[in-house]
Length: 97
Image (tube, rainbow, N blue to C red; front, top):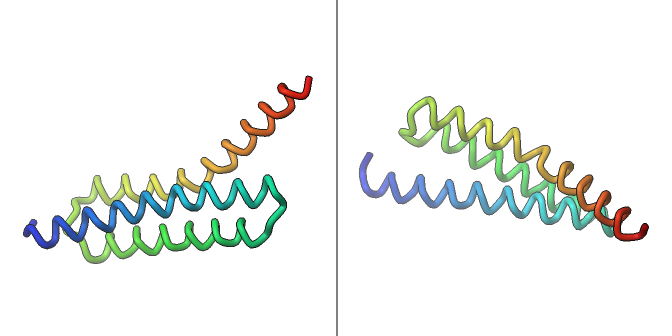
């Protein structure tokens, strides 16, 4: 892997993780505050995350195990906000008791 390609791949992986965090943040905030705009921003970030994953699959020289890990991460990132919201709702219910 050439240095330029390594740098580009690292930047794209950083963007992938940033979009994953933004998806979770916006989606949960939208659900907690009943704001469709925030939830929509979250879904847009998740779509961007998949776009970055596809771009890395097609253009980087990552080996197959790394590409499979990237895909699995994108899939798992789709359920993390749901789990986080469920946990926050349980904490809120426990605090009210």
